[in-house]
Image (cartoon, rainbow, N blue to C red; front, top):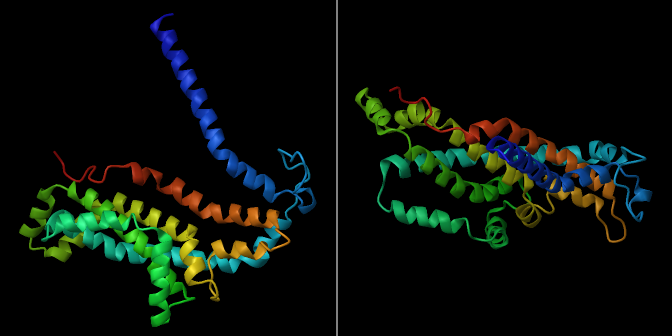
Length: 277
């Protein structure tokens, strides 16, 4: 076998393996879509239909009738979490990367430890605090709680990205008379666009998919996220699976769109083109 044929064979083999693995990973998504179109009377059919032979849109009608307020609340909480995370994490990352205050190493260790605390432990702590300050069953409380997961991750990402920014940019700004805040706002943040997008994306996705904090801190509020809205269709003796899966499909669309739009920013280098040779 020649080297050219061997290369073609390896390429085809790798492509086939990649397609099979992708299909395996995406099968739950397909099954979610399939069940969302399946009539309620066919849910317990054995064996189940691999294709929606008699599709129904009752589940999606239920989403439009019942779930839009929950989707709006999740959007509000997600955007609020992004704003609070960027407000806290970006300056902290800049300080750790470029200002190097005392205890930088210890702060980095604490941020790493914060990522290891189980969410249910944090939820129980927040419950006691929110009960005392009156933030239970409020969307503001969920924004604060979700940000406690996103901020440590955001600080670590910003620190790593901003550490790679050439010191010449910071020095040039200071020579031109820019203070610390002006340097951060006018020089560091524009160069850190990819870090901003990365942190914003993951902050939004964490808040959008959160269930533990929502169920613990906002189970009885008027403004509940979509992860709790799905529970409307689950009862002791009845589960509306087509409505549940239709809600899951609709709730997945914003996350999928954001992932597609942001992937090139996440993959791009943070300092590309910042300094001319």
